[in-house]
Each structure stands twice: as C-alpha cells, then as structure tokens.
Length: 176
Image 1: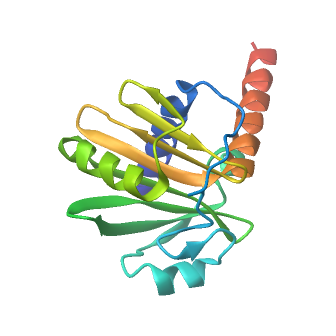
Image 2: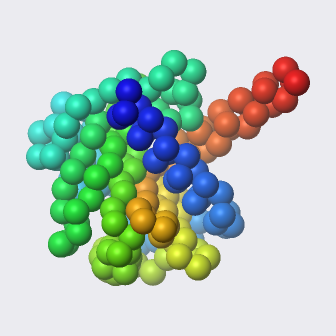
C-alpha cells in the first residue's frame, strides 16, 4: 500500500511540475534519447530487471488510474553520478514508457548538471523547473523543498495521460 501511495504521489508531483512548463513546438534536439540508462522505450519488464540492477518490486496501478499513471511500475534505486536516486519505471501494455525518479533536493544542481551534459541545455526553464521536449521524448526536472523529481518519458504517453486526466475531470464535474 505504501508503494502505491508513493507511486501516485510521485506521479502527481511530476504532473504538477510539468503543468508549469509552457508547451512549445519541439525544437530540433540532437541529444533526444531513445532509452534511459540502456533501457529502450518499448522494452519489457523482464528486460528492465536485466538492465537495471536496482529494480525491485513491480506493482499494478490501482484500478481506474492506469490511464493516468501507467499499468505497472517497478521500483528502482541507482546512483546518478554520486547522487542516490529512487523511482519507478512505468510500463503500459507491458512496454517501458517512462522513468520517474526522486532525489534529495540538496543534490539538485549536481543532477541538473549531469542531465544538461547528457541531453543539452533545457528547451524551457521556469525557475527550478526545466524541460526538454523532442519528437518522441520529454524530460522534466524540478526542485522541491526536500525531494526533487526527474522524469523522462515518451511524448505519446504524456499526451495520453493529459487526455485521460481531462476526461476524468469532465466526468467528475458532470457528477456534481
């Protein structure tokens, strides 16, 4: 149960962060990734467990929330440079679509520098919220008070998630 609550909390934190970034046409992005830490988008859960040495328990998303947070998520823990990172690998229809990670906010500058070195300068910056968007992949990085969030995922998943959230809000408003 704690794992499900953490998954939903992290998902909401990322959604809030991404909501603050202005959507722009995707610039040409020479460093757009097709994988995260060697795990290709579309890879299976078993491939993730082979590639990510720190993959822990995998859980199904709560009923009714799959459209907004994915079908399944696997717990991960790894080092990004010298920063300890915890998070989830998100799967839809058995395929990897997104990584959501948290880390101590005191390490934000280190993580920002690593991500910028790897993927180039952010396309959007709003204070301590940074965003990169390409043809297929979107990345967001945001500093929180104690924990910061780094998310990297498929644009198609993000768009489907936003549509599902709109539909859920509309349905809730109709019931009022």
